[in-house]
Image (cartoon, rainbow, N blue to C red; front, side):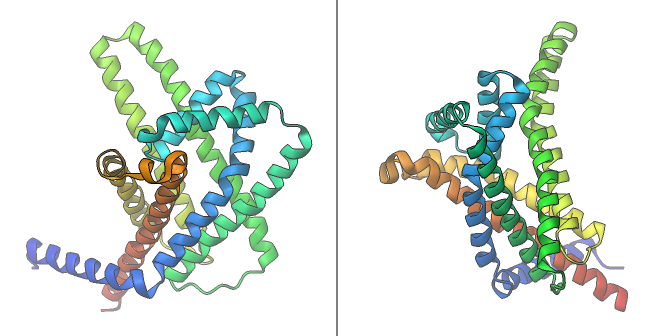
Length: 291
């Protein structure tokens, strides 16, 4: 019987060494840069489409602005640049309110193309890390990428519309339940539900992106590692921007966009780390089964 402490040390050594070597051998830093670049390219056309959708769904520009603002704050921990973020959202909504159908259609087509490039970069990352050969026709892949865009957009829509729903539920529960219990339920749901949706989103990506389906256990482990590192890094990132970084003094009004670029790169890197850990787990399980 293997001692638990010895087993833990062996696993820690295996994953630490494997991750250290894999980050370089599988070109994870290059893939993370490509993912971040594609994310930044998608921001402008995506903002035009999403702001228009939220204005139509919420039927109130103020509610739509608040929903978008809170979503970006949850997804990108940039509280230090809250005023710059509000000004940017305000500008985008002012532009959308005056936009005609033709620019909207063009923005949609551009978004679909750029978003499909983002999905393609994510797929290339997973295929490369798991050593899965590419064998699909490019036209077929583009159609699949566009289909995945709508699925991912559905998850993003859930996250963004989640806050108005939770606020309404909090008002109802506040009238029925004691104040301390209502506040506890509200804070718990506000924290856990977005994480749950993020887990489902990354699980869908890890399981559906590669050309060859990887086992569910591998997808689940990669998802947990990715979402866990993102949530942990949010607090570190906020502390860095608030207490250590001098981005505002160096970049001035552009500090907000620099912070977004840094965060996009980190999320891309974490995605590759999650895939690396999943690959290490898969290889370990296959070696055990071969014994």
